[in-house]
Image 1: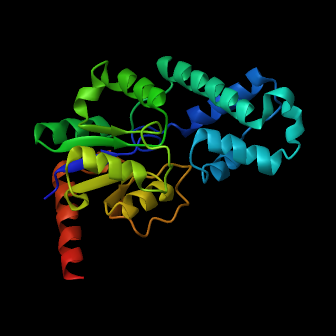
Image 2: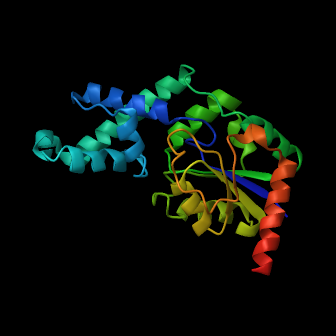
Length: 243
């Protein structure tokens, strides 16, 4: 029986990546760098999970002259760049740059009304999650979620299953009782490693990913309701018991 829905954030709850990309570029300007991440480059960088990690990867591969960071050093520069990027992202969200993807709020309300527990499992920072959901759902958004795992509570990033395992423990549910909702192959691999079946709603940044291990792939959550998810989840559990 389906007793829990576990949502990724970036790309799943909202199509955030264009806003994240713009925030990275704003941070580079504020830091005095001539870097610019276009769509094609950012799509490649999304294979690296985590903003700090993404910056460091770009430094090492595309900007090998790390001596330019001088007295601050590489790690301190990455930290400051990420701080500037987070500030720029939160400003954009607070200014109304984002809204939740189609069907997200409807499914959340439906699940709560029917006693299905809700959780978040993301590797983004808590401030990013709070900015998005307080804007979209109001200041009491946390009351909708029985468990929240993020980049602070689970520092080992996806595709490692750490954040999913933490959330399952907090919920007190077995993986077989829950369904993960993701938008990328990285998230799918993390959820699968935690024993979760996963529904995928891809974005233009992840449309090329390999989703063969997913329960289903749908354009967005307006295409499904809780009854449909219950049915697909039950069918997957029946198939697993026969295998």
